[in-house]
Length: 376
Image (cartoon, rainbow, N blue to C red; front, top):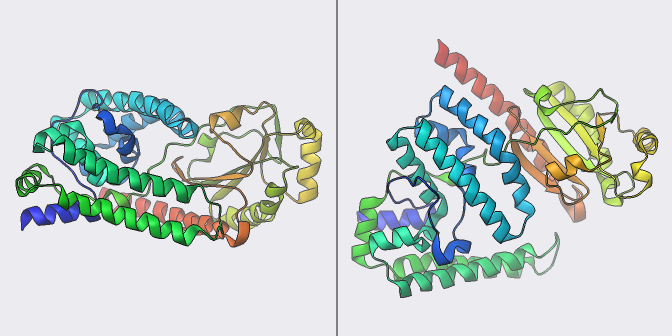
């Protein structure tokens, strides 16, 4: 019965073998491209800090590490997979080095467990775990083939645009592929291997419910020109939810969002929300600060706007298209972003962001209340 429950957790949540924490990043082997890399995301979640028993001092020191690695991690998201993997491996190595120096062995072990949890059934593709449960190469290859089917179905779905009539069919294909992969977890594991898994799995921890899983937002690079405000730094806006959006004033898709940005500025400012625009030029006219200023006035954009003439902030944020909106929480962490028109073909991404803002404001109030209670 216990081994059955273990497999259920593998299928419905995430799986987690208990092994000694690595001092260097583990070699994920020939199936590395199929194995999720969530270690950095995990470490940004307060729930994980609590689960690991990190002290306030340890968390503060860990955030010092984030300030060093988060910029590269966030910018790497736009790179080809192989380049991205190289950077993530390097940064994960820095994380393990930090844990080796600043935490106890049991904390390191628990972090390793949570990483396995985040990889779900794909953890069985790891050489280290396959060796522990004596999973044969043929069975592991079969699991990898099922995983590749899911990966292909995911890619097909990602290649569509909002409103594409093929989406329902592709979603159905993805569902079938995912079901086949889950079935493979029971098909290719022997009773003995299931029993071994039950011995090495730790206490369940659902990483799918973690909310703060993205990097700290990059600090603004200083520029010469600002509109409607003196030069700002994100650090100065701590304590506020910040809506950062990149645009170019001659961009038609950007125009579709302007009314929403102004509404946010008018309706959310008094609630503790800051709206900041970053005008990164694409055309020659957009490189004229006076033209940018006049366009903002004509469009009724009265919130702070940075004129990013050299595209330095565009590069630091790893931005790839106009328009893009980022939601930054009160502590400076990115919580969500959206590329393109917020209401493209019936999308309601403005409402999604507004609901998230409400949650972040409430989340901050709950944290403050908890801190007051715990200090009594």
